[in-house]
Image (tube, rainbow, N blue to C red):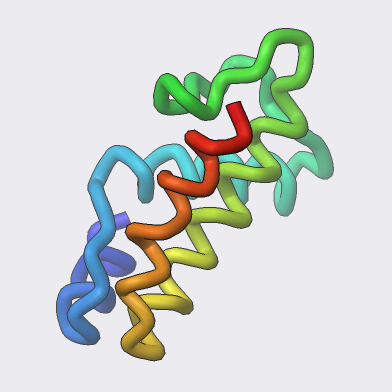
Length: 89
């Protein structure tokens, strides 16, 4: 976990320790156990009733998207995402 944060810091990519921790649990569950772990607690807005697998999938995809956008200098798009999500509600 700390290595991913260190690499992010080296490349000016902002990653919260909590998000890295959750991402690692999701990744490890899928890669090593070939499934989703329903006991993983996601940050508030990611929780979906009766759909833990879908929520974990979207959390992991958005986590990777944040890294890629920051890596390519597209931080402005990170501000657009929450606004677009709010409009969908």
